[in-house]
Length: 492
Image 1 (cartoon, rainbow, N blue to C red):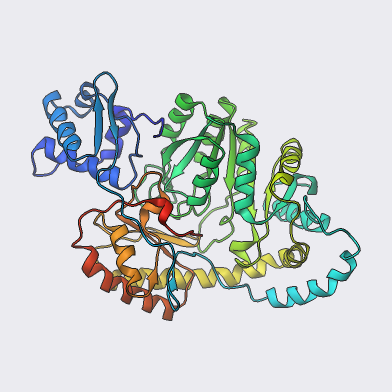
Image 2: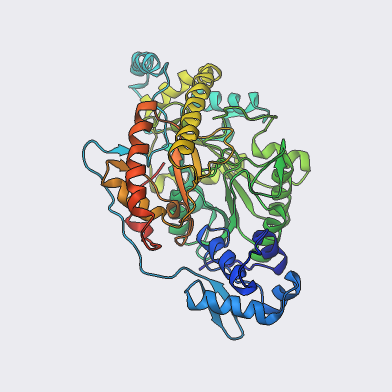
């Protein structure tokens, strides 16, 4: 259960235009139910007191009490006298099988094929390898010239960085787990977005921390705008969360958020960093998708640059990866942080890992200087994928909604009905593995969303949408399912 508490003002903002032709209590209950199903109200969140909500919405307390009673009877809230009403989900879990058969089209992986220069870089790296063979081969920190290349890339992006601020890891996932294990103690609170990257949730929970969720909405439905588009983060709610929870750390994906595709505005970044600094929290900015730009307008610097401009001094640890930009088979990631934090991470790393593969580091070191050209190639691949998904959504499922998508690897598609798990389960019978919306939440919400990668070919999308259309005919008639997240496959 989370530590979140929703004020009447915050809930009023989330409700939006909720009044319909139905009775007031019914319309209010229906809207809160959908907010819970969509994850906009995280599971475990304490709802406002009936009196407070009635005053804010200008309703009678009887109307709010009737709405809460209906939600309670349907299993969407638990109410305890003196403790308030807490959001939950009803019903039994729906387990999904973890693996598929041969010939399955796997959309649980939002990843691009290898960048075109990779084969040549691999051959050159293999020729370079013999000069490293006299060494023991255990490299816990990273090859010096690779760390220098990574540092130079940050500097070119507007964040002056030196090689001793870089630690190379076995992919971004190891970086997340290492940071959690190093900087968190059992019972520490961690601010985390919902929805978010599911394996980050797992790593933080394994460190014994308690999750404090903040919601990220799709780019077309939030209060703050970038070039007339919302950025998806409710800054006032985030600031309130820091004040109330006093977290030790916040894990955020500020650029092309996985899975929503949202990007934090510069103003949001500054205010989040100021809030974190005011409570002594470390901000972990996962930048694995930050450079996967399609047509984003405006300049977006790495997160610590906004701490400098806001004069907050908020500590920021950044995570990067070659797997998203170059190829998933290159298991090379890195951490960029202040030297004192890097030294702590280096000291903690040997407990689970004695070194990062040398040959893969040599490949990545050769490719980083080529990133400007590689990103142009990626931009065109992602544009084609995005436009194909948008067209097929409109043609095949006209009632579905695909948000504004300026970059990243995924689209967070609204499917209209709370049947995402049932749809994903039915799709397996038609040759498609796809991650249901709840895989990206904490306690089974987001049943009205489906994550669709924008990284595949036109032929693969034709197969996928044929499978989804057939599965939809079954899933749309199913009762609302809830699932056991531990039974689901890994997703990237």
